[in-house]
Image (cartoon, rainbow, N blue to C red):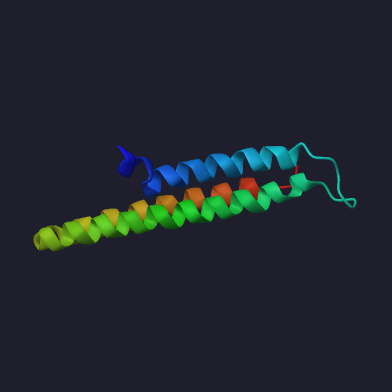
Length: 104
């Protein structure tokens, strides 16, 4: 129980919650030196998008290479599926970056 409480996923989830609450507090803050603190949210969201896409593509490649090493005879179809899935992840990433980078 204690071991699973201090796992990487638990710590990452708690950190994400803390950052979310911190950003919500920053967004509701008053303007400081003529610049609103809400301007930081687009940069923060772009960073999250890029980190998420990198993690997704790395997990995809890891699973594909593991599958190819277990069954070399189907490596061509696995590689094709991996490339298609990576392209879909990148497409979604570009769309998310476009949405996050627009000024409100």
